Amino acid sequence: MMGSRPSGDGSQPHHHMNVLFVCDDNAALSIMAQAILRTVAPTRFTAHSAGCFPNRALNADAIDLLERHHISATDLQPKSVHAFRASAEARVDLIITLSDGAADEDFSHWPGDPFVAHWTVVDATTADADGALRDSFWTLMRRIKIFASLPQAKLSRRLLERRALRLEPGYL
Image 1 (tube, one colour):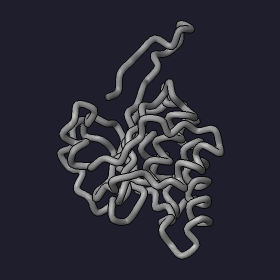
Image 2 (tube, one colour):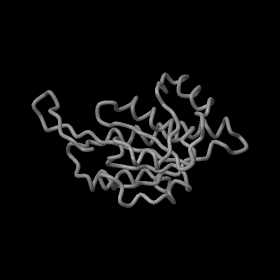
Image 3 (tube, rainbow, N blue to C red):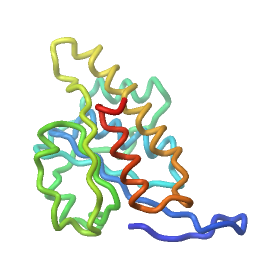
Image 4 (cartoon, one colour):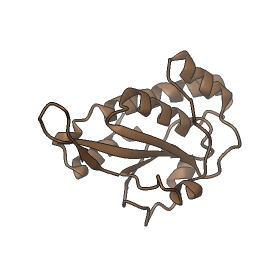
């Protein structure tokens, strides 16, 4: 939910955005994205993740990769998009899908009327799973750092949405 809090320095109010990352299984891609965003911009964003068909457990290699880069995966568990939508946290400003399957999900009538951006990221379950997972991590890290660096307080929601769209694969 977008809210205003004083920035502490007497300048413009600070806008806090809730972001939901969605992939197919919520075991690797969306979990890594959630962990990265909450690490690189913890005071500007609240990061969530969910999956269309969630796994029972997190991808151990994804968790190892996060930990090797000093990114906490504490308290992260796979969850269903449908269960998340029914939760108290469901009101989000931006939904970022990370897989083609997630992009097909119907996000109309979602609480908070969020904007949806589609950032296709290589599926880490391909033949070279280790290399693909590492590539996915760095792709997410780059896009999330760019997105998190946008000056939210000076941009309208529409401009933020357009800039989020520019981080889709066709633009990078």
